[in-house]
Length: 444
Image 1 (tube, rainbow, N blue to C red):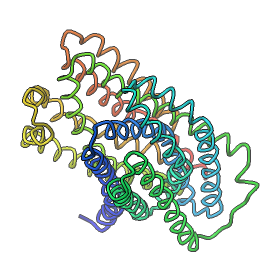
Image 2: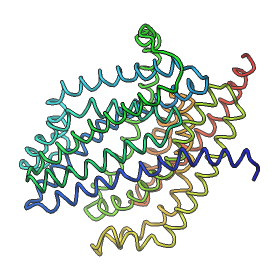
Image 3: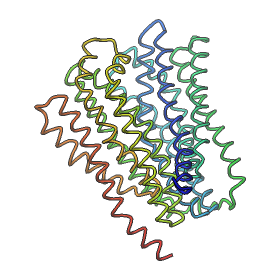
Image 4: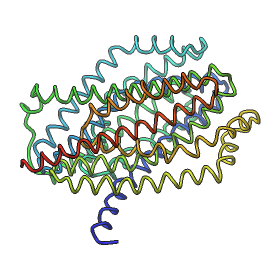
């Protein structure tokens, strides 16, 4: 391996390694939350925190475009060595995040009422869920601002800063869970306060890291440029495309869960377990996509198509090898993993009969994960939106409709073909967009 490839691989690992650790820390918090609430004297506390956290997760995840758009734009400014724009993008993203956060707080009563009507928990769980939500919604400014800062760190090639913030927030949340829920007996309110305090503490840490990092970046903030209408319009267009893409992806998994539930309790339980395989795989493989976001954005800002191709190829190789390892693990130990996740015999046996789909899933899904990172780094938001809509409307829903006779196998077939369609369409778009980058480079 020559020195250039060694350097490229070191860069990929320096970006993807910290992101992998920060991604894996997320399910740990959910596990501790479940364990703490699950040991109280009534199941309604666990139900309330689970429902409340799910509602807020869906609301906040819908605004994940704040991180995604920031990564690509900042990485391009970083590649162009434009210190002024690096600052302007951070301030512009922060303003955008604060406006959304204020709207969420103002609309909190409507949001929780509509959400509870959709979920329809028991009366006791609904009351406690509202208590949880009414506290946690005030973390919206901290959560959304942190999205922007995490995207800014990654765009600045500082994945370790992302890891520091994420691990700090999750560990503090766990500690506060134990202190407030078990130590002070605050139950649902304690869990909500733990998350609220952890989110704001994480924001303060992120701001401190940002200020330290900016000392080594030339340039200055220009207030007029921050509030420039054309720049805000571009950011709004970019964020709207990513928002549509994200909501469409949420629909896919909501539809999958709904159809599973309609098929019966055993089916929905088994599919929920099998989706944990897919979720964990995505947490790890997304780390390479995050590396691609930063590297492709930087190379595009530098107008260096050779660096773009090298970054995509190298990240793809790492992703493919990792996906093959996941598939092998699921082939060898899939039955044992299912046994760890459930001891209900009927659910376990049913899950094992569908394990074949999870054995194939990593090597099929890896393409869509990696190209998501490429497109975010290049800020090809319209193409991301179009791919997602086409994959759902032309592949996912029609395949599900035509495979009704296959039962749950038809549902999994539609999911795997949806992921394959996303990857294939994005690969096609990528090859189509490269000549345009070539022309841009030659005109400079």
